[in-house]
Image 1: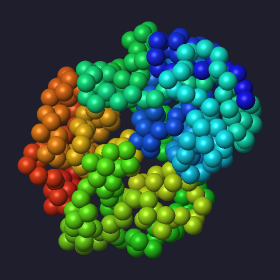
Image 2 (image 1 turned 180 degrees about the vertical axis):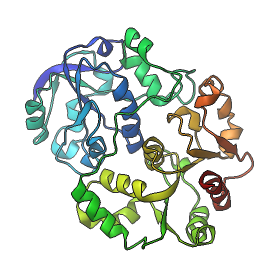
Image 3 (image 1 turned 90 degrees about the vertical axis):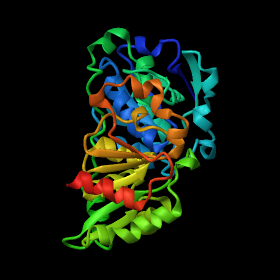
Image 4 (image 1 turned 45 degrees about the vertical axis):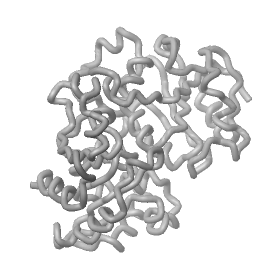
Length: 352
């Protein structure tokens, strides 16, 4: 156990820090890890930053990142630290008061924290504005930037342009080679890989219906005779790549870099593909609106479903105040869930 200054996003105390070595404890989902890449680039460069969570499968997404270093917990699978005797490092988020706090670092994380000379910790619950914030703090990441970054630093950022990410989507050569060798079992010479991420963990209503998933997989050959579809879901990844003993983040980045296009619901793989910009992206939004999350990517086209129209989500401040050049390109389906044919039409437009 160590006693260190502990901060959250409230009350502006973190924005005032200078000359510190900050560990960001980020116990959130894959999409939120992608979003923190944008947050990290906006933070003052006068501090040194590190990031961790219990679940190095996600932490490895920050391999090679600009201005922030991953600190591995030694636990590959995602968890909250309870199995290591340190649930959320012994921190209760609601009790953070931006002052000294006893923090539990189990080994091997404790040694890595010591070696990195960490002297401060940030733990934010990453609040969800759900489109209620106006531009320029309209996305979830930008809203957090507004709380973690001092006013003078904010004034220096070009908020009318897509904000850059710290993520470089780097995969070690050995891991990439092993993953790509296994990928040849799915995609042969001269064939094209089409990735589909049909589900989300945090909100079941984001999930694309199974019938549409099956129709997409079976229809890829008709759309592209040389096309091969691969599902980006846990069972498929575990079955196809689990025995390689490489982090999920490395598998995801390697697959995205080898794909001709990616289609997915509003979950981690879609956010990663949008930020990575390696290939065209079709988003399927059944419960949220795309203007609330990712920085603008001109290689993307987003299909919104009936719940988005019924709740009038496109009329919330995050969407109506955002400049046209930063808005997501969307096609609304107010009466039905967009299906496989709709996704193929979007892909055809992007690949034209």
